[in-house]
Image 1 (cartoon, rainbow, N blue to C red):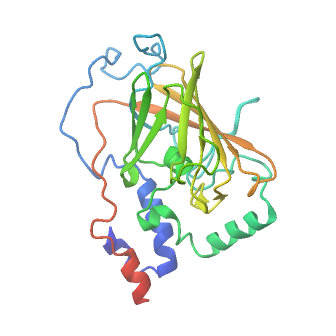
Image 2: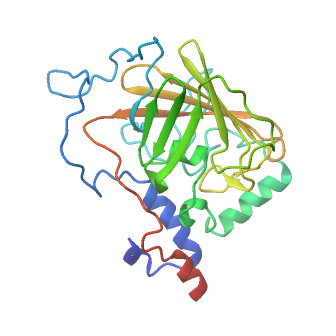
Length: 283
């Protein structure tokens, strides 16, 4: 990939890295052929996406599986679909607030920070620096993620930058803001409300990025996610960002994901032969 960028200026490299990493890895890598067991299939062998939602032994929807961003026919990661009436707008990897007619409700300093990040071609985006991208960018990233669900813990493994996140579902409370050490992914606890998994996250690191364009997230933020596996093949996630330091009001966006079968995540070691930092020092 580096040879593609030799002709780019330093400030353009980060944006190019974000674009390339957002693309599907399907044509870049191959996994040994393996048919996923227990998948409802039609006569042609294709997955029956609208089959009933699988459930765990205790009756909860089973969120386990490999999930990729849902893409409409001809859809692009940069273009959110129009939101059906009464539903949150779709978030995209490049612009989490692109589905809002008036954009996000930025505090003045946050709007200026986003403008500065965009003017620098997003060169400080964590994705371009091989750092964890944070929850929202991981949700909207083009590379897949694996969810592993047990009774007391849900683990999400993100192929992008090899991210690893824990959601505790053992009944523990969300710790007070500022009590544990801030984390890239924050501290997440989940509970079931009927068939919806509700996850609350706080104690995030400061100066985060919600998207490639640099919409900020501060250490004062709380994130609430509502996961619904509406059928065998579809996962719907509504994400509410409540960050009064950066935004005048909380806002909610939606992420749609689709099951991926007969494949697995691949190893993604971003720092292997990483040249980005060297190029910054040289130029």
